[in-house]
Length: 165
Image 1 (cartoon, helix red, strand yellow):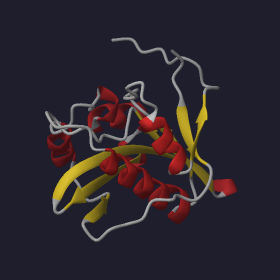
Image 2 (cartoon, rainbow, N blue to C red):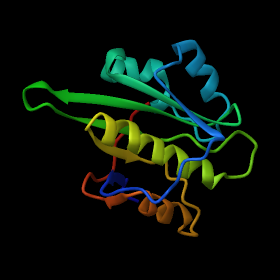
Image 3 (cartoon, rainbow, N blue to C red):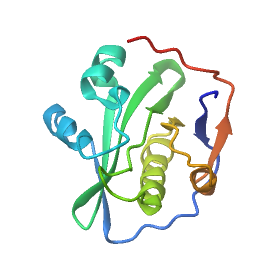
Image 4 (cartoon, one colour):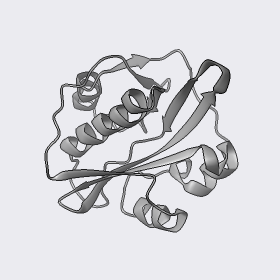
């Protein structure tokens, strides 16, 4: 199945609530590694060490979403900028992470992390935001619909990724 990315196209329909907080670039590498341990959908690509080697540590950005003080979602973004054009991209590869280890799927957490990512990277920083989700769709269409509701459009133009271990 081709990998798809989601690109922000328009404003979100989600609303923020006081019980959610977002931390931007506030974690250390050690803390990030601990955060990854709490998610069933964590992958090698979302590790700080992989991202640092592949894209450079200074090109990484980390977002942690908390609900009532507990981490419910997170994402590592790769930031690339074109200085002359004052433009850039924020990539979320194999993320965001939102499926807490040994817990039921929490679509509200996914909705809020997508909204936060859009706010942080697309609206505040003026970057084109591309999200390459980890393929968590379960056949109901709920996740795809949620991405759409949050202003993301499908893009199958990138084809199938090739990864060697």
